[in-house]
Length: 87
Image (cartoon, rainbow, N blue to C red; front, side):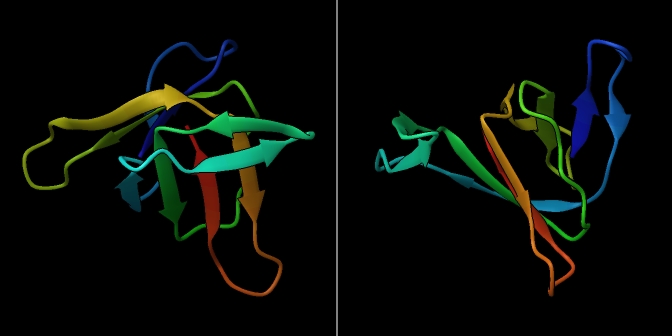
């Protein structure tokens, strides 16, 4: 998974991840507003990525872009060593 921010406009690699497409149109609630997300990404690192950060996921074997988008929800677990984001 690569990320870019406004302060660092080049892509930098963060870690490996699992990327799931939201083909069935599930919604999440963000501050009481229902939002449909395109990608749910889980990664083995405790890091809270800022909302609005641009993220892209690359296929580990081919290097092809699997997903790209802006973070609309971010969270990390306090007991398990992983975090998740929604694009």
